[in-house]
Length: 467
Image 1: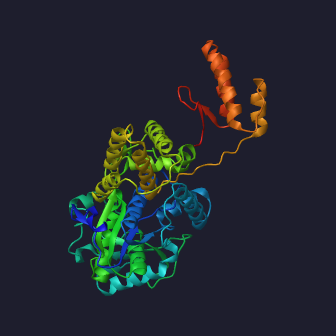
Image 2: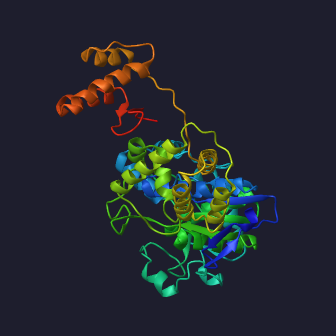
Image 3: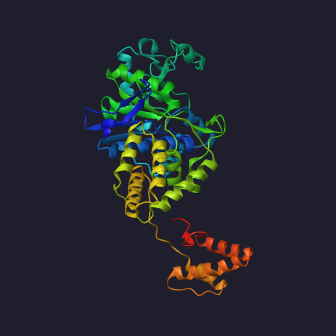
């Protein structure tokens, strides 16, 4: 299967087969800089690449997956000073928030999760190597990569030097040869966190950490390097320059990037003041609904975000849960399995899979009952492959409160809760038939308190709220 998986490669601007001469697919994802709580965009990157990793595993390949944590950089230092805590305290707190969110979104834990502060020695070795090979030079303010020595600079992003220069903010203190050269090591100012190095006490530049980590973990070329498309320049461009200069191998076969989240057409960013915290959405909607929301869009395109779109995802996902409730997951329907593989092999085309699946359900739901059970089993199986969790939940009921609600309507509590609830609903239906809607609404609201939803017009008449 995996030989048929085509992924869009940002470097070649084309779809390419994911093939490996090795038995493992090596994947590195640029993880978070832990200066502030995760927002919805972080959620998207984590989930779409989780879909990718899970699908490659399902296709029969072994995956070695690494995702880093940037726990020291200028932004972290600024934020920690603002909060009057140490950079480490801030980093540890925010790292925990990210991990909690990843867990609640049911993202697989990477095989390696290196932190920048734990990889300083490897970065120093790499910088040393670049200086010896004459790709980097030392100044009073730090060590810089000399882009004029690297012929294929800007090949990944496709930018011109003019564009790069217009976007460069030059600090007065910087004593660089060319304004587009970038920092590998920064000499620390007073009271800033620092580490010893041959060039003076300081801290690493942002780009060097990923190159050092990838080399440390994988020792050579990797199959997929992924991250948000806001990282293509300068981060991934600079990583590529460092790694190919130091190690003279290709570094990365496939560069894979996800699109940004938009709020009513505007890119989400801190400067726009529209970044929304991920934790509140997970609390309000649950991990499954957020995963489903991300599944609806093509991972490479911008995704429009709003609460009403989340509500829509919630309703649709609840319908899927209802459809497959009570069936065992299994690959029982080969047509549906083929639709899934075809869509996923086409650059992880999850919206196409959803569209084809709904069309298929509508075509077959009134047909052969046994066959449709197989379809449901397969839907459950494929959604589990994509990392959704379906729990056949045990319901916990506040019996005291239920007794009060039933006694309030002169109904006795029975051993079988179904009997009691059905009597309650029959009484409520009498009120509705007599157009005493206030009383009927009151009864519905009371049941809501213990997590039971009355569904007028539905055969069973009621369901548990969280099922």
